Image (cartoon, rainbow, N blue to C red; front, side):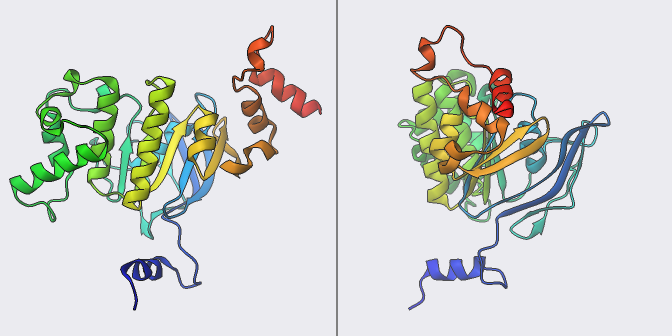
Length: 295
């Protein structure tokens, strides 16, 4: 007997018999004011794959995330690509001037939950706005679905939270609400831009555990931007390393200790450890890369 899982697996296979990627990007280029910020970049994201994009501030990580999500309007920047497709559907490189613009199949979690959530609308109203109307037609169904989404992200008093506005919630709670809203539209690809930067170390780990678990549960792929190599190593399947607007190395997270590019090696060497805490001078990226290149 053919199961639903078997049918889904067959549907995802291309003509060669291999599973087609959920996202395919070829020669993505991003310019601001005529200056090339992201040089021609190509990569794929597999179905249900978790991918981390790491690198220094200003390397182009968030620009790629915003370009994929459709958050770079023509008046702000110029986005071009030979190929940018989601499950075989072409994504327009540039969206309309009006932001936000919904991009079907992609949801995004932003770095600052407070500025990303509407400060006036209640959490329940914001959740209801993104629930698929074809599935949740009545108000009763939408309220029940919104409560279920909040419970899914670990919120124990969903009714109270639904009636609250973001300013009445803690930072960790707002991050969970953003996660619930992002997943409510049932995306094929979830993009998280520095989702843990405003959280302490223990809360960052719990949020990443929750987010990766939910994407697995929902069958979605995940791309997350981070400065934290330890989080990338722990929660990603694959890591894209960006330097000055280019992806300089693509490597399995499990193989990070065997990275070959000097920049990747430099990022790894600069991670704080118990051993480096005893040093008189902590390693910096510049000094480590010079040593790596000289060696």
